[in-house]
Length: 223
Image (tube, rainbow, N blue to C red; front, top):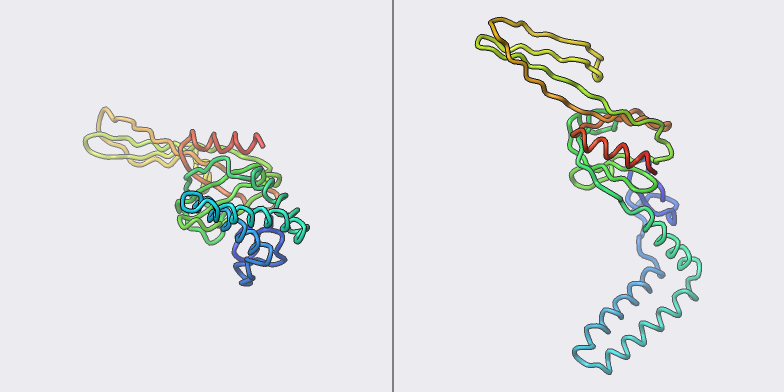
């Protein structure tokens, strides 16, 4: 598998260039034979309920395709078999809904994204399922969960605010609003972030609930 530097899409290494950017044909003779074989098989299954004799002919044509394709296209068949095995290994183990904070080019802060993780890489997709970032798991150096605590002080006359332990966006220790009145009530709101450090990419920070971020971290580290 390769990653296009222009559009960040992932494409098969059978192509020398990105099919999307260079508008290369995706279907060749080998693919047409495969399509014809599958179509013949489907037709045979349907004809079983209509005309059994014709269905046998369709199945016979399918068997012919199954025999002739590996002989006629040995390289393509071997590569397709290998890719099929690789696809089974690289099927996404789990998808996570996350919020992008910083680090992904041309992606807004607080934009909702989908993070997909498989045995070889993690990828970020926008709400249209376009791949906006791709990182190999082997390039990831560290994953760190950050916690931001927001404390709000409420009373009858005023509402104050304190942000404690600002681990992100400037590292502010505490910013305290003006407080007045008696018997203030402290309300705590926690926000969680995951910082992804890799050797070949800028640091990426995403946000979600603590449980989701822990699952992402544990899943990546287990690979």
